[in-house]
Amino acid sequence: KGSRERTVQSQKLVLAQKQQLKMSPQMFQSLELLALPILDLRQRIQEEIEKNPALELTSERAVSIDKLSEGPSRDTDYFENSSDPGFTSRVYTGADADSKQKFMEGALARSESLQDHLVWQLRMSPLSREETELGEILISNLDDNGFYQKPLEEVITPQYAPLLPKVLDIIRNFDPPGICVEGPIESLAVQAALLPGHPEHAVTFITDELELLRKGRFEELAKKYEISVEEVEDAFAFIKTLNPFPGSGYSSTNTEYVVPDITIRKHDSQLRLYIHDDQLPELKIDEQFSTMGEGEQITRETERYIQRAVKDAQWLISSVSMRRNTLRKMGAALMKHQFQFFLKGQKHLKPMTLKDIAEEISVHETTVSRLSHAKYVQTDWGVFPLKYFFSSALSSTNPLGEEYAKNSVKEIMRELIESYSGKKRLSDQKISDMLAEKGIKIARRTVAKYRGELHIESSFDR
Image (cartoon, rainbow, N blue to C red; front, side):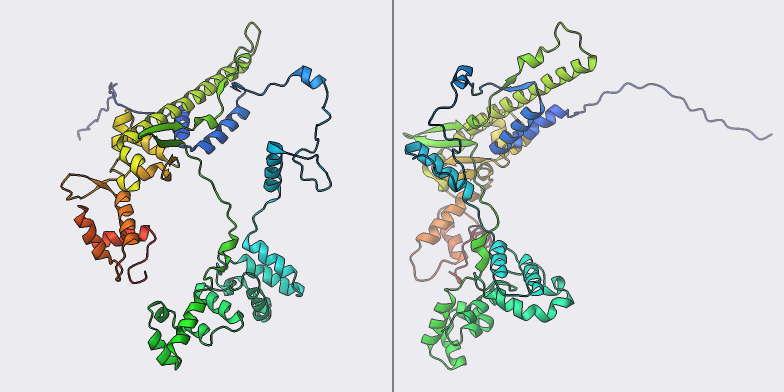
């Protein structure tokens, strides 16, 4: 008989320990609020107030019933700050006049995009229905500079091809001139051709010889085109009056204003810290809502809803308070580490890492990173992103042992270039050598990189 083997599998309980962090929705909300800039946080709080009945503002403008019972005064202007052009208001003076003026300017002012401006001119032109349709297609394909976003062959169907030269010519004559082209070179050529009395070779210089003009090789061009050097210089001076980006004055984007979360200013050789939390509403728990149902018979579901709303409200209030306190600690640590910057300016920015601030205020580096996101600091030297102050140290041979931050070195570079008065422009190598004399050791290619970040052209172009 063959032997039969049996495998016996046994099961048993094993007790093991392990560490695991599970993030609750409330904890996630706290981290999210920590990263929000002040305007976004204010909007988020408003949304929570509308959604959660347990939240209440601590100060609301009270309206007296006795005052309302008196009825409207004779001076009441029912059309106060109205945009009704048929209404004749009473005479406004002082603060009332300023309020009225600001309202009217805010209500009536509207920025006009490049596309709006061109479409208006198109519809004022004597064109057929198909020509107008083609014009609208061409205009919709333009970016903010007035250049094609996509090649014409991708946006124009064959039925419009015979009309294209005429409509293109009409649009290019609109204000601003030189739009509806592929790029800046073609735009300059179109602008030059449209201006009466332009120098004879201006268009040719733009399309074929622009690089020689930029390098100042006027004698070579004069010999090539059999004209005088003065004529070449006149053509170059004319070209410099043209705008290579004609549509830039009609930007369709709205200006976004930065609201700083922190202000650090010097006052009598000392620094003062301000946290701009006064723009946030003060919140509290609505006692009437939280005690709803006490001594009454309510359903279990209603009771859970009230408890959950109150708990969410308490957590929001706690999270906003934690954000405020952490931001204040971070501002104080920033003052300590960058004291010379706030007193003397950008050249005195010191190397500082997330770890430095995290250790100072006893939080994790990721918390400092979240808190630095999209927030700004108002100083005597301007408004800076909070992340601007974080920079690692560059190698230094300074005998005093001073360390330099990247942004500090860039500011020193800017001053060197702007203050240099020699005949020959400073090359990147020369700037590197001058920085080395100050104890700042960086390579020529690093100088070129920083110069590009400062939007400063090379020595040849300068």
